[in-house]
Image 1 (cartoon, protein in one colour):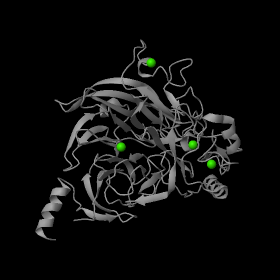
Image 2: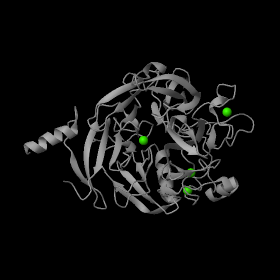
Image 3: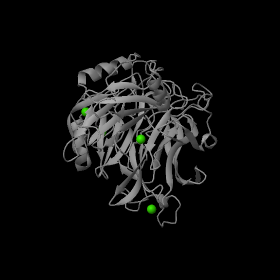
Image 4: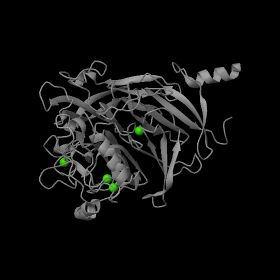
Length: 491
Ligand SMILES: [Ca+2]
Ligand SMILES: [Ca+2]
Ligand SMILES: [Ca+2]
Ligand SMILES: [Ca+2]
């Protein structure tokens, strides 16, 4: 290695990062430089590019919020939330019996007010704070089927730029349902009719499968916050009730009581992005059919009555199940039998929305095989991306990328690019896959100049829910990686 290159590499790598930058070629011939921005993070969950040119980061298991300089990797902890939960640190939590197990996620979403440094210094966070118990007292959450119950919270902090710290927490919602599975967790600021609002993607608790197999699924119930996209005020309104203050008075399901529900019928939505006047979302499918959706007021996205497209591939099946260890050979689930996806979509009517893309609409016969294997106690494998986030690439910096959806995948370890059509309401062509590696990509951020794509990588190589992945070695874990586009190739 030439001395000049070594010095440059050390400068680029920054303090504590031990990997030299590498050149990565994309499927369309794009050249990127890959470098590790930061590591030794405890499951970085949200990375957001702030107006201060820093990455704002949550650590799902570390329960800390930090700002990281993407140039040199230097880190400033803004907030430590470890003292605000009633279960142990992740490295001490007991996942077995008689302990307080870890929820899915932990500290999850973070959203910055669009005017963070211009008079609205608000930072919104979502985290699980309370382990409320399992269906059978004292038995942890394993093999119960009745559910593993937690509460989550959305809170607004004020960023004090002089202290460089988050202060003055105000609770927006304190009693959000949470679980050992399917907590969703993504927060998003988006404008509706020129006014900023806070959106939250919340899963359906895994109600119907595995340890939560006997828990009632509420994704279709507009009176429940489970399996929904929720909308809150970014700033309190004039209502006297402290919780009504945070719920917009024109939310779609406000008829009896103020209700944060914006859309229904979601499984485990973990991706939310706002661009081009639309909210784009991703959610995890069951054994197939991960979804990309466009989120529209009061719409119903079908789960657990329709999985992916209303194409009939789940007819005669359910959205998931548990094999009942005490009653072998029978399904145990609260998910309804899907007699006909098409009939279910018709029954929902005009509010039903198919995904704009399903990843992937696996045929019925393959789904039947997967379910049979699961029923027999085998660990079946199925094709899915496991999309954990989404962002919209609107820059012209990378030729051919303008107005693409970018989706980081936990299971396949790649960034999926989908080209939007001219109206930005559909997908043109197939998936185009980038940066494939042995990595669980959790979230992404894009620099304003469009040249840098930042991806966060899980600390663990395994799933946080009951779906265990194969043990595998990532090029880095618990890290943030930058992929820098090199116009005209690397210099
Ligand atoms: Ca992000
Ligand atoms: Ca209100
Ligand atoms: Ca759906
Ligand atoms: Ca389907």
